[in-house]
Figure (cartoon, rainbow, N blue to C red):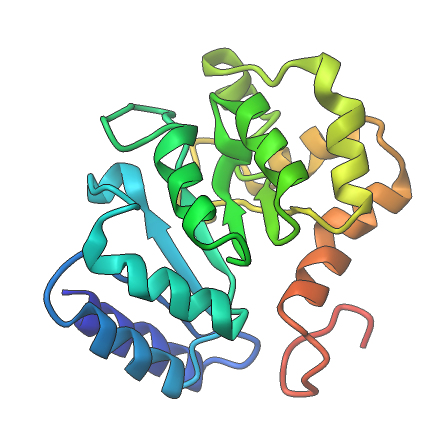
Length: 219
């Protein structure tokens, strides 16, 4: 299934200016082969949803894939937190096991790791190539379900200024207007420099968006 998804997304990216070529993988037969094929076809970002996929990120079948991505420096967005519905493979420990095996993996923890914000924040502080994304965080929808502990905002600010917090949105699958995510980040009052870093510069640096064929809001 992942091979077919990757074929579609890579074809879409090739036909869509400004779209980052993206791929995924599961612990299944052929995963090493089709992951390499996706990279050779230009994939620059991977996404893995541990909750929806309901698989152990430390599964032996994908250990080599994590290593491949770590060696290649290709970022992977990982939904590893237990929100909104936990399973036995979500939460910090399963993915921490992956990082202990592959400490150089470039990983972006979706939703700031909600609801285990603190544990994933500490993970980003510990590992040089681990970042967090802001998807749904601080919106009314998420704050009612899993509020971010305000005592940790200074550390989130430091991570953002260090290049380790990136804007995420889940657009278009949202239960609120897209602008609410941006307004929620502004309301944190962490400074314009932090907002610029989170909303553009950190991701641009991570994905090396100096390619003239990719969209640049400054152009």
